[in-house]
Amino acid sequence: MTVENEILHPDDIYYNSIQSGTYVKTELEFHLFDFGHEKLAAVETEEFKTVPKGKLDLLIERPLGKHWVASFIKGEQLKVWNNIDALVKSGQPVEGQILSKNKGGLSVDIGLRAFLPLSQIAIHRVEDVDSFLGMKSQFKITKFDHDRGNIVISRRALLEAERDSGKEELLANLKVGNEYKGVVRNLTKYGAFVDIGGVEGLLHVSNMSWGRIDNPSELVNPGDEIKVVLLELDKEKMRLSLGRKQLLEDPWEKIEDTIKIGDEFEGPVVSLAPFGAFVSLKEGLEGLVHVSEIAWLEKVNHPKDILKMGQRVRVKVMGVDGDERRISLSIKQLADNPYVVLRADNTNGTHFSGTISSVTEFGLFVNIAPNIDGLVHQSDISWKHEKGDLSERFNVGDAQEVMLLDIDVEAGRVSLGIKQLSDDPWQAAESVVVIGKKIDVTITRIADFGAFAEVMPGIEGLIHVSELSEERVDSPSSVVKVGQQVNVLVTAFDRAAERIGLSLKRDELEAESVSSYSDVEGSASTLGDLLRDRLGDSEE
Image 1: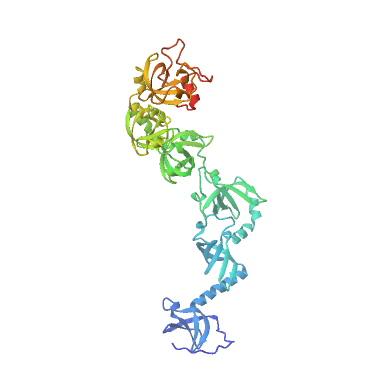
Image 2: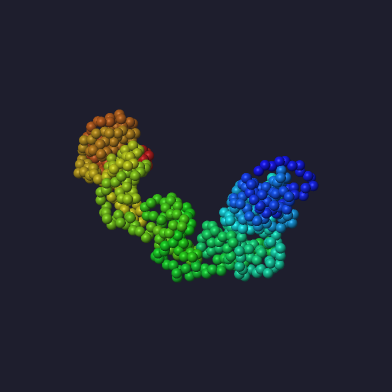
């Protein structure tokens, strides 16, 4: 199409006006419309997906050559803007649909995109805006910037106006204890706001159900119609407290008659806490599986390590307290106690080929069965009572032969030994180390209070400083040396305490008991007591 510029007359009534035009024909890239003027209106074909039919409202922009330049899209937009202008001036609400979330609020389609701030969604603070997505509602236009095309709307303004109109009359007719039908308007983490005839009240989460609820959305959602009872009414502050569970049968009444110790249930996990998991047994009834009752062998630091919300589990009732509204449950009690099984299959003295799972300062933990570790106390590692860091002699993951010493089923503990796998040298020593008999020994260690001597491999006896010589001895090293062989008299043998007393100065036992020693410092009365005082080591 060939067009030529034409001078625009200021008094031309068609300039920038909306006119109704009828489709005539299409020429090149323009659709031509007759709108009652000698010139046709030309609209670019790109504005339509198909060839238009019938009459359409067009924005007549300006004359150009033998046609008028016009636009269908701009005409529709102008009509919307004009409509919004009228709504702003009249204060009338506009209908729209919430489309999506954005920074600070929601995007709403009211014919054009409008912004709904978070604070203007509802009367009360909204925690979960997702529940409003897709909602159709009435909104009040609070800001309209024609130049920038910004539109801000409010839903709260309409709700407040609706709430305030006739509110006093509504409140006057409300009575505590009465049942009402209401509509859920908004959810928060602590409850739901319910409209009962134009007045909103709070249905606290604790009054929603007899059972445990972590989130109000588990029971209700905005728009739901529910029955509630009015619990409290503060007319001055216009506050209502509502209840829902009060209209339901209390499942805790006569609970001992319906749930008994030993009963088994299957239900979903409804809450997880550091101390345990709550499992739903029936509507409004949950019981606690304490963290210690989740598994026999697995170390459970937090129930969430083993269980998940909503997971269905089988439990056994361990206790019922109707007064405290508590039900104790167990998961592990439905399975055999592995320590009972281990006890039934093994006796003390049984040998195991295990793997070292942990090395501590007080002993070794050795795995002897799936998920069962036993403790080899440091006193049961060697007959020699070797000192030092155990991690220097043992490594995690190493194979280790052990002997079963004991199983404490109640405590879930297994005691193991390594030294018990070999003969007890003290048993052999009983026939060699005899009180009143002289034997040859080798000095192994020297201390301030005496000298230690090996009487046979792995067994030492003590020659106290007072038994080294008839003369006063200030330093044991002045009488004996490490490695020196000497002939001594056995003065004491305590098999249970694993203690041997020796004397270098005596040839025979005196009349008084020599199995006890006089403490030259006045505090110790036995060899063991003396060693503990001198060495400061109870193990020695």
